[in-house]
Length: 72
Ligand code: SF4
Image 1 (cartoon, rainbow, N blue to C red):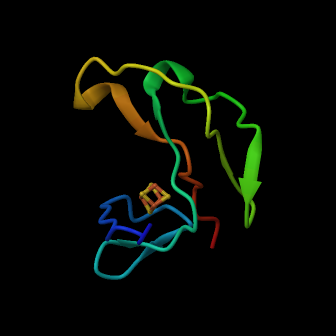
Image 2 (cartoon, protein in one colour; image 1 turned 120 degrees about the vertical axis):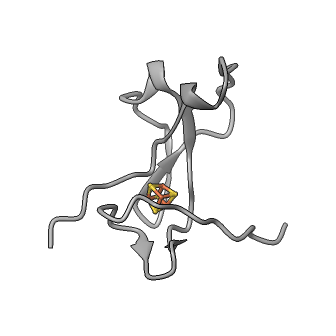
């Protein structure tokens, strides 16, 4: 499966690059209620879950679980 172009405006994320491009190898989206959930799998240090499913109550109920605040 070819990776999609991921555009993101969260410029203080470690994976954010100029042009609003996401450089993460894996992007895990969760519902807001699971924003702090620990994920069972990792790839290049980025956590994800291939099995767990949820249902969002609209776009405002989703969040990027891969977000890591930039420290430099
Ligand atoms: S990991 Fe998520 S928050 Fe960070 S740049 Fe990619 S899409 Fe945006």
